[in-house]
Length: 190
Image 1 (tube, rainbow, N blue to C red):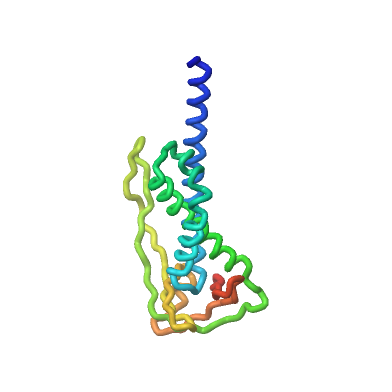
Image 2 (image 1 turned 135 degrees about the horizontal axis):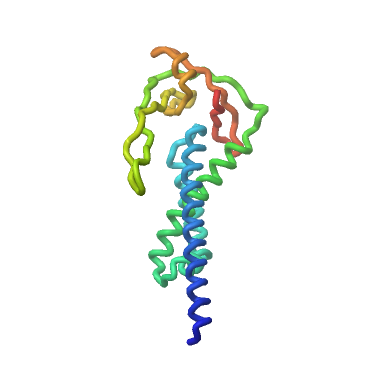
């Protein structure tokens, strides 16, 4: 084996690793996007997860060779696990995104919903104090309201400080809602 062949294999392995890391970061980002879209959609959490799992299972067979190649492993179990974890988030994001971005603007209406509770969570910034060393920094608050939607479901939503301060304990809230592209109601930010 010549020196050039070993360099080509090393370059190929590095390229594969970089591609795998990029794909994992994209999958993590799409999981986060799916959670953000879920926060603005009136749907049970099981539906987008079930759709994502179903679609990931459908694509497992055709994409298993790609995952084995990326992971440099012949283990079908490892490739299948990585595929299911990554692709469930991708398909859940696509499902909720299609509903959100294809929403019918002509159905936009205001809906009065019961305010069940309002609360805030104290969180902390991170502050860097040295190389590879972070400590807890200044506190900040994130504001939430819990409402009962017209279909009877309860939804906890993040809101702005101004909107949070304008509410009283036994108030009702006006939300802007519209019919989503896949039939699930979409809650627009006020």
